[in-house]
Image 1 (cartoon, rainbow, N blue to C red):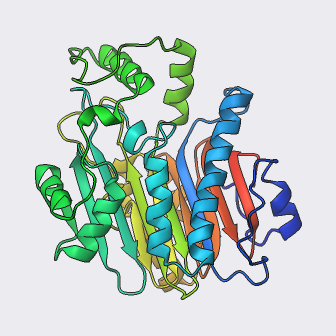
Image 2: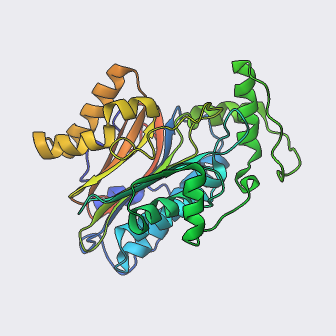
Length: 359
């Protein structure tokens, strides 16, 4: 369902939709003067009212609002959209609530394999990394690939050697360990009839995880990824995405998040970041497909997004969603029960939403 079909929400309504957790920061601009915009997602899935307790819901809303604050501060002070994207995604990569960086899921062999990508819309330069295990902020590495190498995508050990050459922060694999992700992986490995991996070296002592919490986590993060699309005061639109992939993935599986055109795309005034069943997003080239429906078919932003996500993706059997900026206006479309999402623009004011019955 598309939960954001009306983009031009009145500023007063949008402010009220932040549900009391929004920061009051304005960074010296009111909505009429604001020339920058940003939209964020933290993954899509079966996220329904009543499945999260109040404290957990508040924590997610606070995290999304803080992400808006970080991006808004960069953009309002004249920073680039690339800087805003990297700043916000680095924060989300450090937040274990999200399936990226420190909150990443585990493979069936007990590892965290991280993917990320970034793209700028003015010249379509792009950078991506796949299967990295020791780089604290994969989004920073993806940007370095774009700006400091002649390549678009690096993977595995080679990507990590390049990260070291760029003085990016390298950490022990245990840095990414979280107990609930480990427990979720073990549960899935048991379901698949696979051998349980050994607990990683350097991981903390085991802690109990409630089965009910695992149920909720697996539903809400079925398609966990984080992404940001931003436009800066100079008019540059860019997009970025980061993920830990899917729980108990095997055989070096890579999804859509590091694939330019599928998980991340920016061209001209259009930028998209995806979250969902990556195999379907790759086959449909979802992110680029939406921008091209706008550019080539003349569709408006929401119609193009819904046409791909609600119709084409759904018909194929794929689940998930996207965030989009077009000409500075933010939007999103998803065919799951919910998506962690937030936006801040002159058109919308601040909006933070989780459930399908919210804008």
